[in-house]
Picture (tube, rainbow, N blue to C red):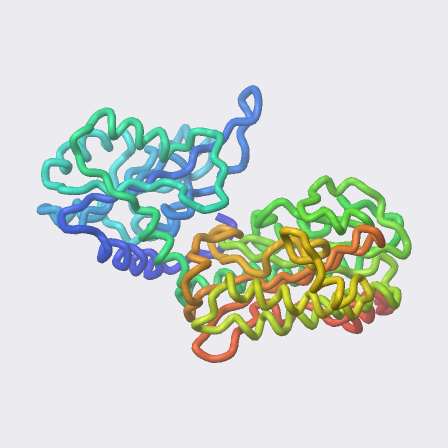
Length: 433
């Protein structure tokens, strides 16, 4: 792996916390993700199932984790099943986990090859009273391709129709909301790599370059620092494109006088960061661009300060809406009377700010979590207000990643330039010899 080895204490603790939530005499089964096909014999880059990685640290396909804390045979309380490696596989595909290496990564002593799974699980099931199976229950998930978990669920229910099945997803969501110090360090590493990419882009950007050239600068810096690349599809949106929330074509020329909205960040060891900055293509904001930028920045700072224990994200979004409305009135986009007399289904400010302010961040960029429960220490959120004025071709979004603590929120991106003066100074700094 490109990333440095992670202490298996993290995964040992995660399994302990998970199994404590299981009913008595329960088996839990987690599958790796598939390696997805493209065309002919091509495949997409592999991305591990977040829950399996969270519990084991195993980062390769065709892997299964079985947890059975009440197994009569102690060696079967934690089991990894891996694709058997060989010299031939090593020649064609590279080194895969050996049983010893899997133990060192995960802390799990019992490792079998995958071909033994059906036999082993068949011998364990008579001891079990419940079987916990994993599914993707993220509120925003739109799954059109049958996953390995979905296939396994069908297989298991067909082969063992009388067994009592339970859901792992609610337990995993609850556990993954709170990040351990190991996880915070990995997210911080992703943020630090993202900072390097952003600073590189500030030095590179000028009128006439293509949006995809900016994307390439980020990718170069991310990969050279041990990341696999972007934590999500990057948005590099100049001019009018800055008002398109999910613009990912990144294929237009950047013009003098435009702003450039860049929503791009690195992953590290499967953990995501999520940064947005809006910068002037020519290195200097116009007075109007600066006014819009500073309006968003004021809201972002206030919203960040609200990410404290006890806050409910839905209520935070409501408060941010009030802040945005005040700023929009100050920018002359509508009046206080217009806002009060507006009869639409949505408040008037929604014309210029259409999305939420915060989402959970972790192994997934839109990580699992309960938006209706009070915020707790150890949670990590984005904070990303924006103002999008389509008729002026000015879209501004500013986003950092925030760790909730017992005290004040900790900005994991506090070293990434954010003030107008910082950005302009860096973009106009003399080129060193």
